[in-house]
Image (cartoon, rainbow, N blue to C red; front, side, top):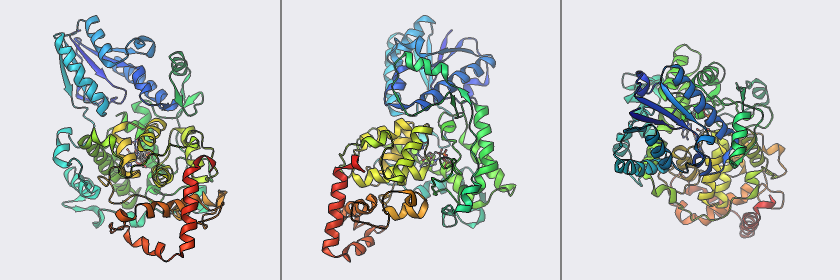
Length: 515
Ligand code: FAD
């Protein structure tokens, strides 16, 4: 072996140019590492899905004729970091060159920069390659984003639509509009709920990985059965994509923001659940976008559905990555509202009387998944309104979701959800009272709290928390044209009513564990 090439768990991109040719002097490494299981407490399904997918990827490469070493936790138990692992393996294989793909996380990028220096001292040359996954080239992040500055998603998204010629008719958007949200985002009626398709879930055996995790005392959260339902290979991922296009895409836009607790399929609804496959790079973003465009061209799905879906991938996903790389490492420290409260115990078990919270959290523990509105407007909104510490909230999101990798988790959590970045992503905090939850879901009619009430022991906690949040940050929010007018409603309330609302909120914020 002359060259060692490392493939990280989220770099399972079979179409990378590395694999175009076989080269006997190259050894590919796919390695389970304890450090990757331990930088945060992950959901057991997440660790398992990554490990299974890595193993399948290593096997597929081997079948294609490449030299591959797949190391499990058993083999790397003494390697605390990539530094020790790679220097050891370079020695063992007498490698003179180390190659890797640009990691998506700042944390790992720092480690690899250090590793490069160490390897150089031993006369080993190292080279970093592009991961050949994202649509916006890494080098162009700095020309599209400015550190600390807000950039509108819409501006970025339109540029990407034009650049990649997606849903365009020469320089005009197909259908005449860039955005069809006004037609989307409907609530699910009873008759709609019966129509929700059962999601496609896989059936991967988990026992070997489970034994390994136990043997190495890997601490995890969440539940897992004997089989894992997430895609762990490119062929699984393609099946999931196909299933989404056939059965879910046509209603994706319409029910994108809806929530229900009235069907066993409440957790999946019309969402693609492709985020894990995409983030592990088993699927390429353009592949997913093209599948959606084809469905539109074949009259299988409307422009509303297809544009809404494509905006998530061509727009949001690329945008979020740009925000992350342009603003790290400072972004990880941001705490605009100086929020310091501890995350309550029920985030770890779902035991709370608030139906929206208990549904979302229990579902997350059971499936390692929640869809966007559950993340943003249920747990996210609650964390924002109660002033939970962004470091702890970040750790919760980073641990619990199957698709959570810091580059995408952190800007969504700290920025979009908690407004801890002070407006780099969002133009206003996404805060809402119980009426939003009631409008978009059927949670409230199954809740012990009454969504119509603001005060009293059985009033929906979100109602007083909402006003309390608004009043605490009035000086700042009143200047925001998208939010300022709301204070008129507050000012019309009698003094004693205002007092009652604020004292209810105060009690709640100090007694989160009793909700
Ligand atoms: P769909 O609803 O089917 O959307 C399709 C695809 O669009 C997704 O697979 C995803 O790749 C992309 N996408 C949609 N919204 C976003 C977004 N805001 N940012 C980036 N990509 C997006 N997404 C992650 O991939 N990892 C995370 O750790 C993560 N953490 C989040 C934390 C919070 C607080 C919030 C509000 C959102 C977070 N998101 C995260 C974004 C989004 O919620 C998930 O991508 C989505 O729910 C994944 O489910 P899906 O594949 O069914 O998505």
